[in-house]
Length: 88
Image 1 (tube, rainbow, N blue to C red):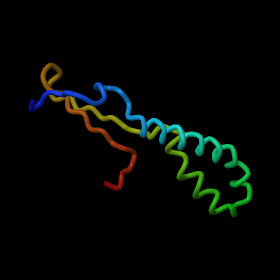
Image 2: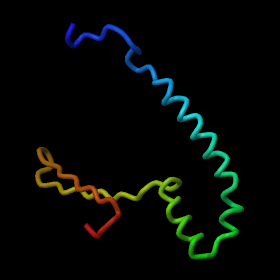
Image 3: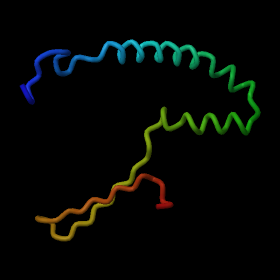
Image 4: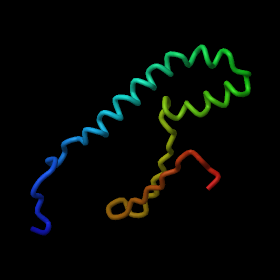
């Protein structure tokens, strides 16, 4: 029958391989994170700064600015979202 699901996983059930892979990667990353302070202390200052700046987006939320232009308070509100990168 076309368009009707007749077998396999039910909707919303996670794929076993994807779940296993995610768990394996999580274990590897947890180990690496524990080693991070020692690895950073052994790096040259410029390389340490580069690594830390690459990791910051995963720790701190990205700044976004929102500007609202109200033309007619009842009918029109235009929102402009800026990503914080003004070079666009």
